[in-house]
Image (cartoon, each protein chain N blue to C red):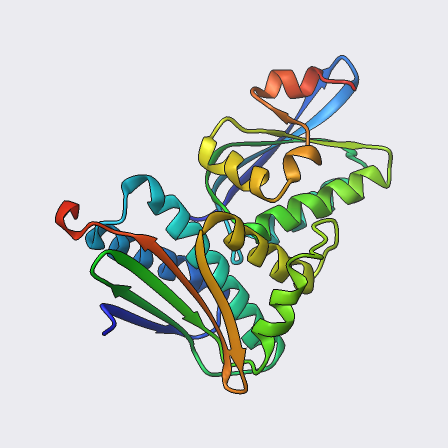
Length: 145
Length: 117
């Protein structure tokens, strides 16, 4: 069951809100203080990518962020509603060209950053849209208030 | 926190350098402002830029894309783009994307301004 679920309209200005919420929930879930910067950056990258995909495909539906506290882990799912987007973009990671400019290049660099930062990450996609799922070890006993 | 930008010209051994002091968060929302600033400087003939990132709290791949775009623009005019950054959390993003090999990264603005290679 989701601990916190967030839906926001696909506008760049809301990505910061998603980062702040994710970091706050991760801290409460007992994610190591040193990993919170990673959580913040990774969720920001995933949300920026989803916002870009929705906008470029003219999709008005909100971007979905699901933050889940598990027994020994904290997971984040960022979902978009662009069919098949994850597949194509995931294939692009290996051939990412950071020298290139434009939306496609940003998208690939975003995924490159996520895969560099997060050990446990899955990018999937089907006809309903794509999901980036990431998780970090958490120790709820050490969670701050 | 929003993005803050200010520019000044400093003369180093190699000539005039335009120092762009950036503060706050560079992300998908604020990066276009930094892009505009860099494009404007290059259009106005400033081809040797030093981007001081000591006041940056957050940087994502959109921000990296803007910096790479700036580098491309100044290189088209035989110029340079140097970064000033000591913050580990920011440097980490340059490392995992391999961009430490693309940008000269300095510890201080003075060092970046005096660099000529």
